Image 1 (cartoon, rainbow, N blue to C red):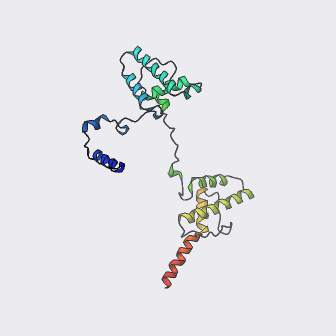
Image 2 (cartoon, rainbow, N blue to C red):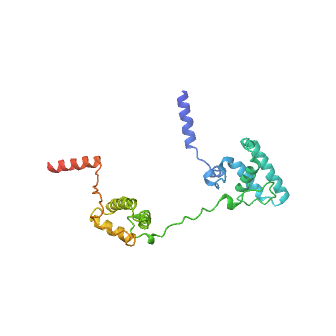
Image 3 (cartoon, rainbow, N blue to C red):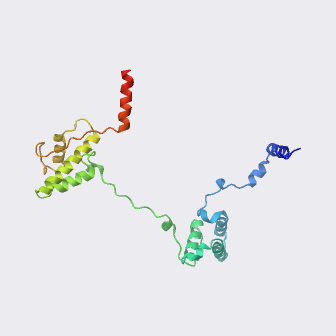
Length: 228
């Protein structure tokens, strides 16, 4: 019998051998365990900390915690390079214990509130304060700022820039029904009547939609097929 046949026969025997359910229960899988609090220390250190928390005697529990700290220094020598290694180790032990380890820590340790700080609330502007949503809050603020400026060439130029940008935003929102008169009416409304202009008072550019080259080619092919 060749080596290949022996290997194949052995593989078939192993594949056909039933596995006792008791053996499966003896094999622990990480997927069935509680997630590690600090994965870099591994499951064994986590188990030691979990055991330490359950020790009823406070003095014995404290000795156990110090022993775990010494083990961590041995297994992870990189911690010794850090001048704050002692505090870091005890912080990590407290985190792995889910902040339930009741001992006299040799250094002040991190608290649960410090480890999981609540983010500051984000101040949201009230959408009701926006007069025209398609212009946005920034354009509205700029219009109101320019409206309070003294009459000057700079003010006139800024009004032109803002009005042209308002026209572009309106076209992006609704390509139909965009007119200079409508933009200027909105400008007057946002500024509380402080900027009251007619279409002849200011020049607004005629913006046109630019069709991407790929889309132009697709439309051209589509039209050619229809012609045939």
